Image (cartoon, rainbow, N blue to C red):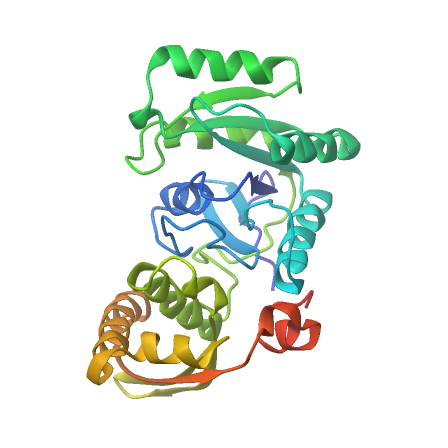
Length: 301
C-alpha cells in the first residue's frame, strides 16, 4: 500500500540521542502528544530503539528514541550502546539532548564524533530549563558552540512541554520529499506485546528500589484479544532469588500494585479492558548472557 498523501509529501528519520536520564523519552512523548515511551527518574530506562511517528499536514516525522549512551558493563549494555551507534548511522538527522548547566562529557563528545563521521544534520536540545536559569542555559550553549555546527539550539522543558513545538518547527526543514513509510494515523511501529512489556517494566522501575529494576526483564507469554477484553500473561525475570521476594512483596502486595498500575495504562493505550496475569521468575545474571539478552528481545531484529 502506498501511504503517500500527495505529490509533495515529505518524511525523515530523526534520532533522539544523549546520555541517560536527560529526558529523551519525555521529549518523544511530548512531540507525539501521546505516551509511547516509558519514562522514569532512573537512568538507562530505555533499552530498545523506540519509533514514534507524527504525521502533520504533508509531513511525516519518524522519531527514534534511543537508549542513553553509557559505558557498557554487561551484554545488555553492549546491546544498548550498539543500538545508539547503529541508529545514528541509519537516520537523516539527530536531536542531541543535554541538560541545562551540564558540561559536555565523554558521552556527548562520542556522539558528536559519530555525527561528524556521518555528516549528520543535528539540533542541540537543552532540556530541563525549568530547573535552571538563563545564565546556565547561555553557558551550556557556549560550551557546545565550537563542538559541532548544530542547525539550531533550542532550550526546552520536555516535562512541561515548553519549547517542544519549536523543536518540531526546526525539524521540518530536515525532512526530504518522498513517500511516507507509515500510515497517516500510525504513532509507533512497536508490536502490542512489546508495548505491554514496556508498560510493565515502567511500573517496576517506579515501584522498586534503585538497583533491582535494572536486573528485570519482561516477556509477554500470552496476548489474547477477545471481544471487549485483552488477556495478557507476562513473566517478570530477575537476577536473584532475593529480588524475586522483593518484587512480589509482602503477601504479594507490591506485585499487585505493579499489575494494577500497568493494567490501567494498558487499558488507556489499547482502549479496552485488560486482564493481566503476572509471574516472577529468576534467571541469574541474565544481563551478562548474550543468549538470554537476545531471548528477552534485546537483539538486532
